[in-house]
Length: 196
Image 1: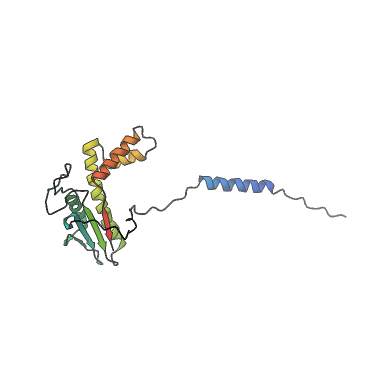
Image 2: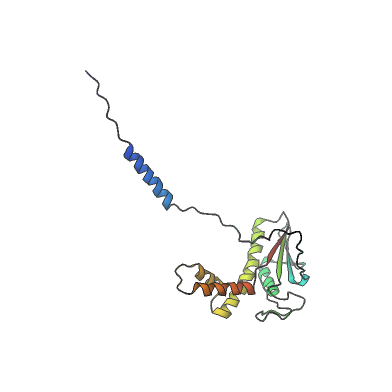
């Protein structure tokens, strides 16, 4: 008796289904991207360019040692007090050129927010947690001042303005909002220098 040949299974449709499933998962899957700390790197050093002269009173020095102790302007300070100290330094308006500054107008502190620089230096033994906490407090000082200024000029906080600008469904004038955001950034520029 003759042997019958086993019927073949058509695998063509299986390959099509697998291909369609692969495309479906590639299209619908979102890939999380890691986001780091947003910092603007200094420009490439031009050997002919001379660095600008910065008065020592316009530099707010923050040092972190290997034991995670904070030394601000040559005095020990707790992390919880850093934000307020930075705000007082940035908003001082010592030379009188800042009409919107609400500080003490101390001539021995910063002249105005445009000239004020915060210098952060840490040792290698500093823990990453403390370093990030100090950076957060310093950035929060800038955000606090920007929020107050935006509230007084436009009736809403700087963070709300940035959220509205990023919102694609926001019904207002984005160009005008961008100009307002840039104005606040110019009045309180974030000048945070990290020293090695």
